[in-house]
Amino acid sequence: MENLVISDFKLGIIAGGQLGKMLVLAAANWDVKTLVLDREDHCPASDVCTRFVKGDPHSFEDVYNFGKQVDMLTFEIESVNIEAVKKLKAEGIRIHPDPGALEIIQDKGMQKHFYQKNRIPTARFQIFESEDSIKEAIGDGTISFPFVQKLRTGGYDGRGVAVIKSPADMHLLLKGASVIEEKIQIAKEISVIAARNQRGEVRCFPVVEMVFNEEANLVEKLICPSSIDSEKQQEAITLATQVIEAFELQGLLAVEMFLDKEEKIWVNESAPRTHNSGHHTIESVITSQFEQQLRAIFNFSLGSTHLKLPAVMINLLGEPGYEGDVKYEGLTECMAIEGVKFHLYGKKISKPYRKMGHATILGTTIERAIERADIVKNQLKITAWQKQS
Ligand SMILES: Nc1ncnc2c1ncn2[C@@H]1O[C@H](COP(=O)(O)OP(=O)(O)O)[C@@H](O)[C@H]1O
Ligand SMILES: [Mg+2]
Image (cartoon, rainbow, N blue to C red; front, side, top):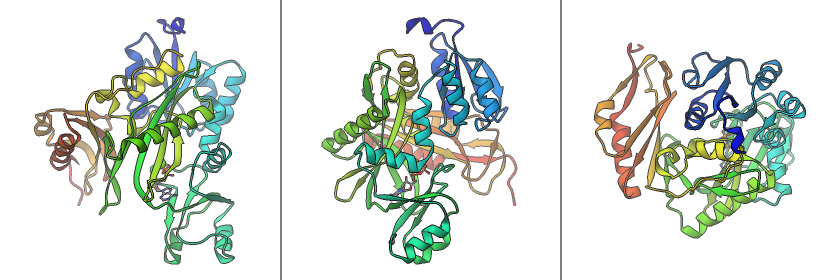
């Protein structure tokens, strides 16, 4: 595959958010040209890619025309026009991950069926066409409280998911075709990013653990190594390997899992791409997730996933109460702390809770890294030049 890395090789990336930007930067280390398709002129990848193409990843024409200009197509998001990528594949364009895996993952219902068929442990589920059919099933006892509702398509970052604990939560029920899942008694949420090349070689990154802020009910930080015992970590890695092999996927697959209170691991969902839970790999692992995606899709040997240093990742969100031209307060102080690495996505406007960047914080021990991350969290404020009343 070495002959793919030549000066005029064009890698097409669908969507140019922060993950796309970091993939472009990794490709720039090799002799690979990058074309990025995104709806927004000023998306994070637009300034760093070789050529930016404005277009909608959901539009058949935009995706098809974009695919015709590149030698290989890959993705930053899974929500893309599937008919266009299927047609491009039929016309001989190399697409990784394969449209077949993408199509299953796009639909949470098909994804759950896939796990069931492949004997991957996942929360018990049923599929419903509408809100009314869910209400009916509650009425006749087919569904019992508590449960989790997920829209089959279009959800992300918790949007499209409703946790219905009791009849009092019924107003939270979402409209649309959904998966209804048994609510798992979660002890920890963890993730493993697996990579697989065309030869079937698989490598997984170390387990990452999400640490929640109980008060805000938000993920506050991601830590690696995880605090769960090493046998359980190995089990999670074995599961992620099984999932990527079941999909026969060439590329990267981020597998989100739950460790329940009885120490059983369940696969929640997978993303066929780089993932927030792999941000830290840029600084803390021998091979970053972005380089690994390139290695996998170009069918090179996969890189070492050895953790060089413990790491914490925190998201940098816009402060509530501010909207306008972004202003970073406390950056100078935070830069003075050892092991703090900022990634600012270049979004011009800050809004309450908008994800403006992330920081990876390294330490010789995970405790040290967590201490430093907590300082950054308290000191860095992303506000705007004019305060809104
Ligand atoms: N079966 C479940 N039991 C308990 N909590 C769940 C379950 N499914 C999802 N959740 C909670 O909802 C969150 C979002 O669900 P997820 O399926 O990962 O959707 P998204 O695509 O928004 O990431 C999970 O990270 C977890 O906290
Ligand atoms: Mg998720």
